[in-house]
Image (cartoon, rainbow, N blue to C red):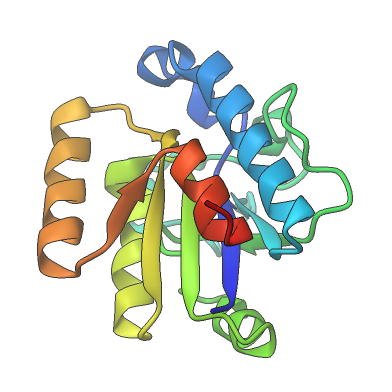
Length: 186
């Protein structure tokens, strides 16, 4: 079984939200722990981030409707949050909620012979959830890092996770369970 860890949108812009700020310390701690576990087990880790161009060419429909861009390339908003251990890890830049849309994610996962994805990051009901749903469409089994995901809306998060776990048989594991899953140890 080959697995990859995707860390999604752990960027300053998202943690400007008070709903995510309250989870930031836990998210950094648990995500770093997960990154260390994956690295020690030689599991590929991919830092997925959202970046847009100021010229509107990459903006989503909501951004275009509102006339307001977000997370511009090279801005402080686009940087990973302080304390996150991302150095020397490959990055994947996306412009849509799903990490599969308009990127080479599928190619990378196929080149790594990946069958399982562990997803961490924000927001569970949006980018993490959309990536999980599309992963199912590409026949990847998905596990959510339960201690390393968060959302701006707890009800949306619960609903998204319920749908993905019930309908797509995706799992939620804490870091202790993920250590066993990734290392094959008991």
